[in-house]
Image (cartoon, rainbow, N blue to C red; front, side):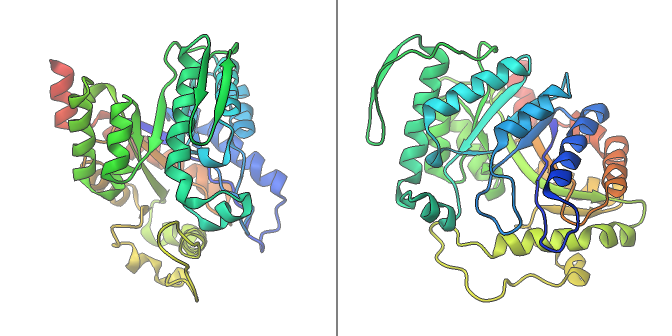
Length: 352
């Protein structure tokens, strides 16, 4: 499987480092990830966040592309309901050219009610805007000229004169339920995030791919996780606990689309108690020694047909030396086993 690196630029209000310094540290981490043999750098977006979570992946990925030569780069993900699809297509094609054909585009519908309210986009339209926008982008990549008349966009005589360098730029779509994975499979694309909702969702994705004439071995399924490793478990938690706590509290404090409003203090243990909470299967973080992290990550990976793993190593307050040491230990002790693993279904399909 492919093992990717996922920077998560954030600045806690109590941190003394400037936002510029934090951006630079994450870009440096991505360069280091290439040196260690990671296959991808993925970068996402969030908006109006109290911890200044990075809102714009394309400029950051452009900076990373300029300092690397082999590692593939991609959005994970671009929230398409907030974007103009023609502009996204142009940005993706331009970045693919600048990176020498290393770009991959992941799009999604968005999750946080606060972002939809601020952008003045009806959250009930998120899926419709996602798939209509996606179909427009795919036409931009593959057709010389087209017109489009839909529910949300009408474009006459579009000529997309800047095309991706890759003949077929890889496109991923975040989908978590049966309807979503069926839409992704019908278009013959890759699915991101479905595996977090159980192996049966990935099995449905593969079944739908076959029904539409596609080989599952040619289509990816991505998984996200957060990792921190040290030689000693106590040391690993001492270095990571505060950052993990912030990330979980930030996540728990949002209003998720379709889940109502979260009120009161998030039900997240204090940093010193997070280790005992790590058994929660819905929380994708892995902290400990190389053996412990390898065991827990492989357990997640083997639960379904995963082809891509996107890992976040740096959280708020974390020191660069500790982050890079964690990446070193991962590359030496954990990555080889992950890179060698293939789901039996994928292996069998590849042998045909």
